[in-house]
Image (cartoon, rainbow, N blue to C red; front, top):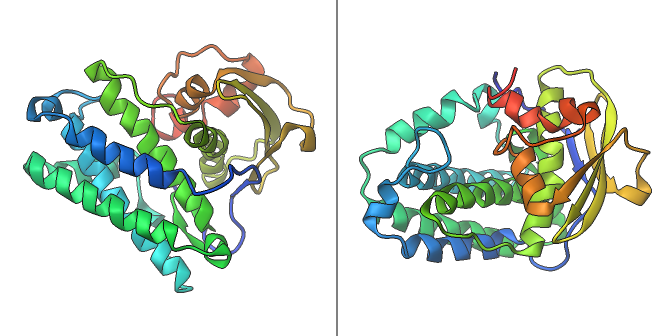
Length: 278
């Protein structure tokens, strides 16, 4: 299925909960540059958790996305948000881009990822309050730049685990990173479903530990809103577990995870979009 992003001034995703301080995207990218620099060429050829993709393929994908995030934010800051993803297929399009990247040397891919990460971090660090609220393009459509940064963090955070876990390495778990990924990732699947025409409504509770968080994700037919649990409506049920496990499940990395039957429609949103469930 195509993403069918929602463009214009009514974002399909609203995340009211924020971590304080510098956006964790910056630290995540800097760490990942170091992590990738420590891998040898044999590691780059090993399979990742992404079916059919090696470590090199995943990093090549992140080279492309780094460039897109920076371009998208810059266009949004200029008042002309892009619409490049109107025909993007979340299964076929990344695979086609990965095919184009194959054949690039490990040295070149490592260098391009480092350069792209530095450029993106510089853009993020230069944002003021007005810039964070400017509309720019992400896969769900036009959203505030802060949510573009959230999506960029979530995508690379999950892919960092896709790379390291099969290599037997335990990824760093930073509280600000995982909380940002959880809050954004909890809304993303249903945002895509809304863009595809879903009319399902409801509220899902998420109760996490290590680090702890409690939030409600509400779908009202027009948008998906993430709020502090105490400020949201009563949910139909709760997803509970460690914050990392919840991000993994909501990111379609553990589609066999046990969840309440009343929340199956909600928790499997991204798995449906990525053709892992129908």
